[in-house]
Amino acid sequence: MKTRTHLYVSRKNALTWLMALCMAASAVARIAFSGVKGSGDTSYLWSQILLPIAATSLYALIALLDGEKLFYKTAIPVWMMAIYAGLWISGNVENRMMVWLFWVALVFFAFLYTDISAGHHGVFFLLPIVCVPMVILLYFYRGSLLKGDILGMKDCFADFLALAGVLLICFAVRIHPAGEYHRAWGDRVDGRRIRSLPAMAQVSPYIMVTRNTSSNLFEDSFEISQIDRYIRQKRREGMTNFGITHVLLACYVRALCRYPGLNRFISGQKVYSRGDDIQYCMTIKKEMTASSPDTVIKVHLNPRDTAADVYKKLQDAVDNVKNTPLDSSFDNTAAVFTMIPGVLLKFAVWGLKTLDYFGMLPGFLLEVSPFHGSLFFTSMGSLGIPPIFHHLYDFGNLPVFGAFGMKRRATEVLEDGTVVQRKFVDVKFVLDERIVDGFYYAAFFKHYKRLLMHPEILDNPPEEVLSDID
Image (tube, rainbow, N blue to C red):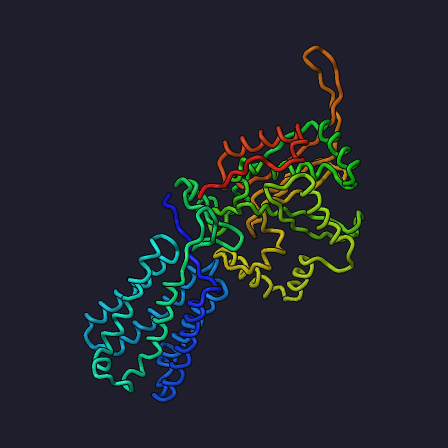
């Protein structure tokens, strides 16, 4: 796959502020001169005044507020300006062939700007590309320029200012260091789209549309003698609430160092990777009583976390919920939806699903949603029952749901005929088969089981953390 560069502009660069000044001056000039000329009909007001003002304002805001991360989104106001210019040409040029040629030139400019700002081609192409609309503008106002007719140039003054701002950006743009990830077109707030998957892996989400119809079930049993010793050691070290949940979760996190594919998810029929952000969700009760309400916590883990890191992050989240009389963010968000009438609530949920499909769901909703994450792990052992196969949710993008049960004893006969009694814990997973293939899942769980046999490995950070494919 071709390596893509990532462009950015910095607020510390004076040229970025000069660009914003040009865009602001362009908007002011357009308002001032349109007042002198008369706004005309409604279509003129929207296409020739409000559209370019919105485009120049949006360009300046994106560059100033998010230019270091989302510079590629300046292509949106560029397309708006191209549409504005095309509509102006359509209304002022009688020759249909010329109109068609100018539209082709404007679309060519907007398309190449989008491609270059997304890092698909060298940044040095940006400056000559910006000259395309400048040449078009000079062509239409060549008469006034040659005559020095300042009054005749007032109609294009705002356009020259806007293009001057884009030209300044061409000199302010820089390239992010290689190896760093930065969002691009097609990525989501909560994940990077994987573009180099085999064809079948890209097509299968369109064939197997929902998570529950694409689920595989996996179960296994783990001998926990080493885990029990490890838990007692950690409690002696001061981690008084350290338990098997922390071990199982820490081992899962550590296994992702070698098999990062399990931190993918499906959304909008596309496969995404969360990278190093492992979002763990868990249902808890403030009190272990049947009448105590459930709430959900979400903890952000990292493949480099040790067992102590996992314990601290998880314990802080649990204590924050149990030791406060206030509801969690999840509870407060759910309470808002209960105030919506049933018919409208169904429409609201449909709207959220649609926004989520296109990756437009606000970040604060993604953060409080228990349906968006890397892993949901639940302890049936704390309830004194065996584990269950818990379904995945068709809303959201959670690809893995795990459950483990209470400890049990089993008698085994060794090779020498000796009968021993050992303790086991049963685990069950429901897995979205579309994120990785069966071989990958099998390799992951074999590695996971090896880690559980040697939990002391979790005391130190991993020696190597592999990155998912592009």
